[in-house]
Length: 259
View: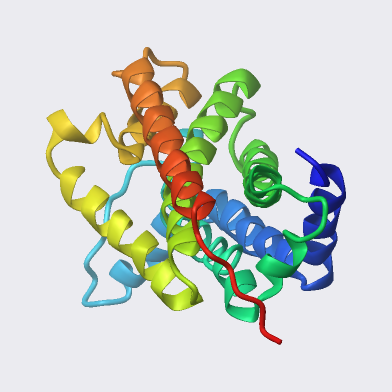
């Protein structure tokens, strides 16, 4: 794949220069920090509000590290989906829209190298963001509650990351199909909506990226996870198929330059 390493460095530099990486890290850092904080202080806030309204007392269980983990998965795998969907929308579509894709591909850069470099830059950006969120949650959970097993929490984080990569792949596919960013994001959002509807049914949910979240919670708590390998295999299969479709769609496209 001629020109791959040079183009990958260019993508990573662009991610830094445009503050794309900084924004992603900031969003995930906030999600990671607020997860244990919400688990710790939301019950106390609700008790305070309940006591102040007509003398009604709200009795809630004492929050634990388990609640912090649940908040982490809910926040990072929930709100983080929108970051994963919006992040790739311009990776290819913007280059085609501006005519730069045709230009760079006249250099010693093959189409597989072009797509692979963009995919790796996307994956690295999401990985750094999720890692920052996980570190923040792990640290604050240890401060506010008790330290949680590192191995289980790491496995849960990897499952969350895999789910986000699957959602991101749909927008990446849209970005290769379209020549504008908004339609590309629309494909990613449509895929998220369809997956969310399918996840309503437990027998189907385990074969979707949404099905990774229950096993993620369970492995973080040291429990025997349900349908773990089924959900991993299904998500990896979806990821591979979607990326293959992205490659097939991009392979035969005629790219124009903006003279």
